[in-house]
Image (cartoon, rainbow, N blue to C red; front, top):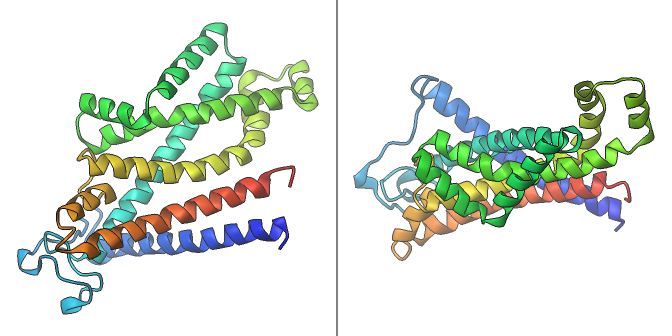
Amino acid sequence: MSKRSKINTEIKIGSLLLGTYFLWALSWFFYSYIYEGSFSSPYFPASDIKKELFSPLQDGYLLGTDLYGRSLFQVLSAGLFYSLGIGLTISFLSAGIGIVIGYLSVVGPRSVKAASELVTNLIFIFPSILIAILVMSLTGQSFSGLVFALVVTGWPGYARISRGETLRVMGLTYVESAKAIGVGPFRLFAKIVLPAILPFLLVHIVLGISGVIISEASLGFLGLGGSEYSWGALLSSAKTVLLEAPYMGVVLSLVMAGLIIGLNLVGDGLRDYLDPKS
């Protein structure tokens, strides 16, 4: 098998997995926000203590029920929609901030370069999960606090990549020519630098989504999630009934692992596919 065939296989398998998850999340969106509920009052699975911890396929429940008697399939669907939404939101926000700061650290004044390098290094010194816990302890446990905490820990990685790629692009002949004829820094960024670095950053955005989902699940497992349907919060509740209902932990772990594997396969495939050496 050639390297190109292997790359295509990775992208195809990852895309198939991701397509399945996105279709699942989209189906839940229509079911929750249009069919059973509305945008002002969406449907979410209700608790029923009488149906607590039903086994898979028992009483018509495909994956059984959770600790509160809710359909585990519906709970997983709500958690998938939430995880994909927060993963995409935080990844694109972090990438946007990182790209701008990385570019300014190359073309900006010396004070901006020094400040961006100092802040980036400070954030990289400490584990991101500890910084996120610190930020959430200051902002409070909420969805907005969770987004802020994960963006704070996410943008430095994109800033470093953006800075390195901007330095490479700024040294190219056609960029030097554009600067010589008087193209301003903002137009240079929008018309030349950004299109040149976006394909490389796209790979890291895809891989970053999986990192955000894992970080959010970790915070949810610690009780700092932004929703009760966070996969981390669900795994935390499954831990309390691990011996009584092991299927909860198994199903949650497999579903989350499938999404992460799909994202990593697409990211790795794109990285090799877009590599000029290939």
